Image (tube, rainbow, N blue to C red; front, side):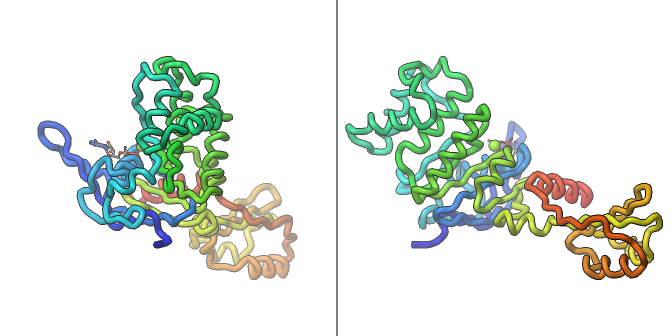
Length: 316
Ligand SMILES: Nc1ncnc2c1ncn2[C@@H]1O[C@H](COP(=O)(O)OP(=O)(O)OP(=O)(O)O)[C@@H](O)[C@H]1O
Ligand SMILES: [Mg+2]
């Protein structure tokens, strides 16, 4: 069995909108893979192409070009359906059905037998909706519907779970429940692929992350891979004048020096042309006192905003 449960190569989706058939290139050659058993998070700004990518993965829309392998099948294959759980970005349910009835309906679609009532009650309990078991969905709040949607995605015990913004509309407890359920699913051997705007949750949960922007996958990797290149060193020296060796490096965009009263705050980005050790030795040799040296990490939000700023500066 292949290690990759999802493999996309140069996947594109173009929509043609309106009477004049205006061309919208929603996804422009996205390639990435998701390994069995991992939690993969897809992040990106509004309109980046997350939902369009997910709709192609789940067979709801056809790619315009590119190749896609899901669970070893070429393209979306109906044989995947029973092994796939999907929470759409916006769910539409029959308002007149109760929470129990809708989950029972999905359980039937998954081919579950008479004992499915047990599974329905388990999932109602797991998503905190037991109290609304016999209430009609038309009376549900947004967050309550989202919880039912999550139960619907998981009730068939799928191998691969694809969730389009599972935390959307949820209160903090609901968000934590979703995170727990995602982790639990991974512990049961499932693969989870989800999109999100809640970056701290993505950071806490995901083994690997992909950043999509403007229809293109900007980066994919483990958080360590993505964030280690964003680490920088902060050095504070006591002294009034900018040391000569820093002055010489002023042209280096990876080194910045800010004088504050009788202190100098120096920041070295990962690609700075001077090593921390050399800088400190020179500073000490020239009579400066080293007040502090600290390695500062970046988080996903820093990466996300920084990449956006870089792209804006490049005029993309
Ligand atoms: N059915 C469609 N017809 C025309 N254009 C579409 C269609 N679906 C999506 N688009 C366009 O494709 C682009 C990507 O949309 P998509 O819904 O995939 O973004 P997203 O990353 O999911 O955004 P969000 O974070 O807001 O959910 C947008 O420009 C959108 O307007
Ligand atoms: Mg979306």
